[in-house]
Amino acid sequence: MNKLSIITKGIIKENPIFVLVLGMCPTLGTTTSAFNGLGMGLATTFVLMLSNLVISLIAGFIPAKVRIPSFIVVIAVFVTVVQLVMQAYVPALYETLGLFIPLIVVNCIVLGRAEAFASKNKPLDSFLDGLGAGIGFTLGLTVLGTVRELLGSGAFFGWKILPGDAMLVFILAPGAFIALGYLMVLFNKIKKA
Amino acid sequence: MEYILIIISAVFVNNIVLNQFLGVCPFLGVSNKISTAVGMGAAVVFVMTLATLITYLIQNYILDPLNIGFMQTVTFILVIASLVQMVEIILKKISPALYQALGIFLPLITTNCAVLGVAIIVVTKEFTFSGTAAMLNLPQALVYTASMALGFGLALVIFAGMREQMDLVGIPKPFRGVPIALITAGILALAFMGFSGIV
Amino acid sequence: MARESNFKNMFLCLLIICFGGSALLGGVYLMTYRPIADAQTAKVNQALAGVLPEFDNIPADEAYRVQVDGRSVTVYPATKSGIFAGAAVEAVTTKGFGGPITLMVGFKADGTIYNTAVISHSETPGLGDKMDPKKSDFSLQFKDKNPETFKLAVKKDGGQVDAITAATISSRAFCDAVSLAYTAFRQAAQKGGDQ
Image (cartoon, rainbow over all chains, first blue to last red; front, side, top):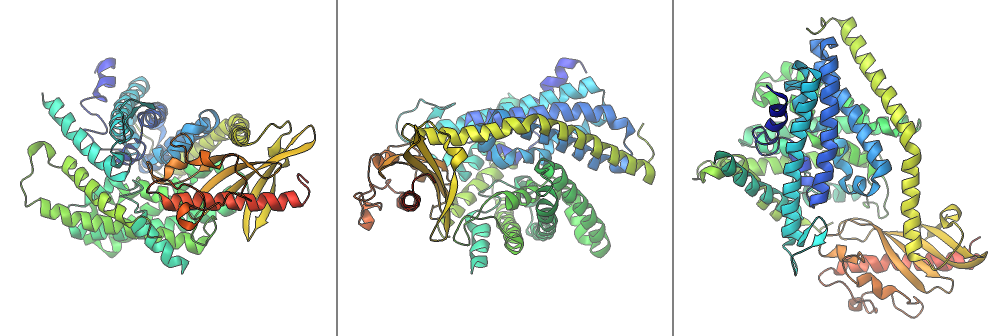
């Protein structure tokens, strides 16, 4: 598998949100605006790349029975790093994303990529795999965030571009489910074409 | 009295799945049949309450006094992972049938955002149940957690019932599976919004 | 390729990973705790600057707590050239629709409201969240009003405050927080300004 295809498979063919249906909680919870979705995606991508890299490096030294707990600790460490760095340098985004930042550690995408790819492949490939899955995840989050922000508050990345009141429900809980459902249908149709 | 407020608020008003978006993965995955939904709900109630008991004590007696709050994520997830491992072993011995039925979903409780999410909420957020905004004490925290888990179970069982009905209806091909489940969940969430403002 | 799963290996592996991880985290924490504290102070100072008239002290350093009817509020006194210029009060109301609402209300020395700021809330977007000055002019009506003459209740309750349309509960909670802040301000002013 050449290096470029490792990255791109995470974007379309094995997109974490639309194809693998993983990481639903942050997808629904942090996409009230395009900016929030983007921020969440970037934070997760950071964790994905580093945890994949480290796990790939140390996988050879881990006894099989403690594989999962070891992976989880590594991931938790990088998630905490992201938490601290965000709290220090982007405090506003940190507060908006709130609970979902520590929840990156239980995002099935991260543990899933570690288990399925990083533990069995070379460090550079694993790093790129994390990057690809991260890009796919971020893309999905940003698209969903854009749709919800546009329909729910008439704005795009904070700039109000649609006049009048919008359909509030899209910023609220039900709208998240419904918007994601329809986006998935769209994605499936595009993928088949 | 405030315990009743806590329970109603956690189960209906701030339902963990339909309002807080925690526990959505198992919600979509296990809700195909009512019987598995009930089993999963019960397992989550047990794991969540026990996990929160331990993490609450760790936060208040180890992390805060030593000022190492940044170790919260790592210690909490380790507690949860070990707890799930233990539950698996116990369940295998006591009820192999339920163990088989839950299949892959039991170890997945570890990565269930709901368990870690509630554990963190309970030691971070201030609540207004007692009239002023304050942190929960241990009994309140446990009641809150158990109620959150009950809310999870309730949403799960209702949703399983809906999905069992949907299996009998013709659904357009692009919508089958996850998309229609999401849209239905959205409508259910819409219904639950009617509870807001009760407490 | 992996090591054998005997007890010694498993224990050692987990121990090393936990220690290594904790060491890394300790290092990152040492690097970030100063910026984190600074970010939090900056946030408070920004809120203070928005609600207080001109001052040249550091109100956050002179902040103290006051008890009003069992509710605790924080008072940030402001002085200019040593003379009491006003105070900002951080008050929490539990009567919000979606949860507690924290406001920062800035008063001039004579008790007139200079400005208000929302520190945190959980109100419904598009309804209660209009209390945020960025979303609507609701909070602007409190500016330059003296609570002695301006009744801090919604018009429905006999007061003079124009509630947010379809968000009466949030509006009432806002008024509750402002009155709590004013009572605290009077109590603090009686004790001699910023002492």
